[in-house]
Length: 606
Image (cartoon, rainbow, N blue to C red; front, side, top):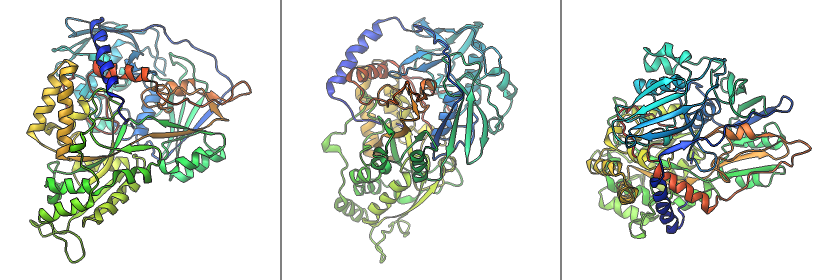
């Protein structure tokens, strides 16, 4: 999960200047050096606490951030996100070079890599994975390949990626985990439901760890992969344990029952920071908490609330919500109020909404707007829809994989009660929320969106074509669709920027949903037990597997020779510039950690 405050305007200017140098350089990603294999100490176990379980370990059936963590710990991408700044970096491929005006990319695949069961990993596995994702239209993965993309494997260490149009292709990079053909080829003719229901253990993977056991609702164990091609991890096992609530997880951290607490609520931050021998990693936010509205069209279960189709009602709802109080209450010291759907981490693209266009907290104005729109209060104080004659009551699920979602929902309910709107908050699991989103069986909900450095993916989810797929509530607006397509087909970043910002403003004004907050993800660990984490991106990034698995490879137990140092904080301006350059150069879609993409035709946006 992820979001961030924008930097000074000069940083965006520097990013554009740096882009000129990048564009002028040859299009390639190359390996500077292969990882070396190191020795390890005696057998050890790293114990991680979490409050959202791994309901399904199947790589093709991911529903939550924790399931993505499990997959990231086990599988490689062809090119990965660099540990420093999330640029494309060597992984299974040591590099990719473009020709024919970026229509053809030739990637060199490492030799000598093996799957955890000892079978060689070759370019054919990568080509199979990509074709499989395209053919089956798997959630999260298929959208990285423009229509007509093909793959060739002239030998075991070469993959050729061909596109009909110029593309940045593999160097986005495509966030698609490579799977073994010899395991998954038997599903080549199976339907998606059959494939996503497979829960075979142990996993056959290429990453540093392999899931070997799962006790539903309790724990998940990952053992070190004996055939891992990179640096040997210090821990023999990583055990993720599920806690029923945040307080229990924090207490386990204090007692030394776990070494790491993954995904703390902001409300617990002050207490955790005071705990001896515990360090908190306040991850620079790259996600936002979302209140989405349902517009209908998903299926028979979808019965959207008529009043929420009225822009005046949606605007009054936003005016009634005190985002600053919400942030201070639910995420004290660990979030900022939300505005637009492009996270502030995307420094170059993010729009700071002009003050004269901000929808500020103003419950008096919200009441006036609702009165003018004809939504009079009934005898019980609840407003009534003038068209249906029914009270304005909103069913609002909140997802357990979104830190603080239920508390946010309860605060929103309180804010809206003050303007005559009743909200019934319904906490649900991440898996259930996915079903709700797909069926349209809700009025509004609170979930999260994880971000991309490039804006294309996030902007795409609000297009009409994403109804019944990525779209929160089947928002459809031809004018917005045209804006999206215009930014998508504009290749020069300086020309594209004002279109992207216009699209952000359009969504902000038309309110398909409300960006409530940009929270920081919070992780805590025992400094007297574990050290050596590698934050991704560097400084204030994630310690747990998110973009890469590096941190759980470099982590090791504290011994007499280690001081239990904690991760440092504060991303430097230089790193921000690097990230901004990547954002401009690597145009395409990062995956959102909870959304499916069934659109094989989604073009990339280079």
